[in-house]
Image (tube, rainbow, N blue to C red):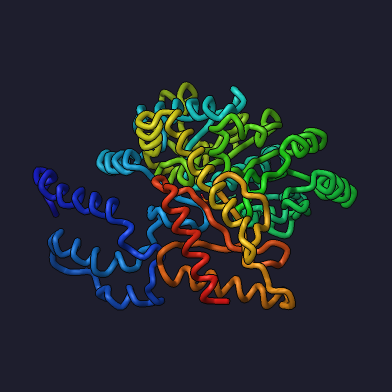
Length: 471
Ligand SMILES: *Cc1c(COP(=O)(O)O)cnc(C)c1O
């Protein structure tokens, strides 16, 4: 074990490694090209009995681990949603590890609780959220949505389900495009996956509020208990935004919990020109978005806002003797705001990011990503052999190679699958896919922190070149 007295010397090697990694990241293939089991074969079957030097470990990091890494911070990474970071966030994470505090309650680190509270207020203000909402940091949007549904369940059953288990057939509604974490949460919280009612969508894949209301009415007639609606602000497949205002009116009418999953696109509320997405937010009970996706804060950092934290606390509070404190009730003990007891000091990296960038640079960078995407979509839209499957939105475009005149849907799907595989196999850029009404479509995102116009140009060139090869 190293002596902290030597930290200065050994950490210099690690920071030099990080420096090199960040500045030479484009020398790696974006997507790892290893086959299943390849890394495992190179790892000893047993833990070493004797101490090994950091030098030995770092050598294996380069030789064994790095080839098996897909480089999410590569500016040519355009897959899934981003999980971007920034130098400030990396440094704060370093410090968080050094402090190593367990931030379960105010007493276990008052600064962590109070910094978290203030960061949530900064974000609420910067995103134009209703002034009454209060926030808490969670590990992921999946956990936040689970916390929302557990709370909705308690509210719908008069806070009896935690004690007695669920009785009655509770129903939750979301669109067919909602994230799989909602379905997962339905199973975990005991309401049951079959009681998640999937509402249909319009041609832009947005939830149909009229159909939502009809499904609720039918459920009431069949003695179900409607409990909650989950609206998505930016679906994972195509970044569609459900019409919140109309959904909120339905929730008001039937007295239902309204949770908004804005894991990715919620960040765009930082930009006043996208605040139309949050129209109706006054009626929303809970809202989640991930600074660890598109706000320069390394994974994990998910921000969960609720209208009434007392409902959350009543759902999660449990008070063993060893956690009883004198400050209880006068401060925020965030362990009562979600599932885990132990909590990392995640507010620190948000503080570093928001202070060192300032709202102005955060907004400018988001707008830059949106402009880069427009550039891509314009060029792609002009090409004869390609088509955009939806209008480009935020920093996201969905496109595919057009089928030639007489080929059927299956053939054209196969062609686009082949295109995607060939692109990712070359390692210059990385894209992922979705399906829209059965059509295989390629997705591209411009959300890595340091992405620039040259990377848009490279993506276009690469896609057009590979398209020639697979046709
Ligand atoms: C990414 C995503 C999630 C899951 O986020 P985690 O933080 O990884 O749990 C949930 N919902 C939507 C809409 C997403 O895009």
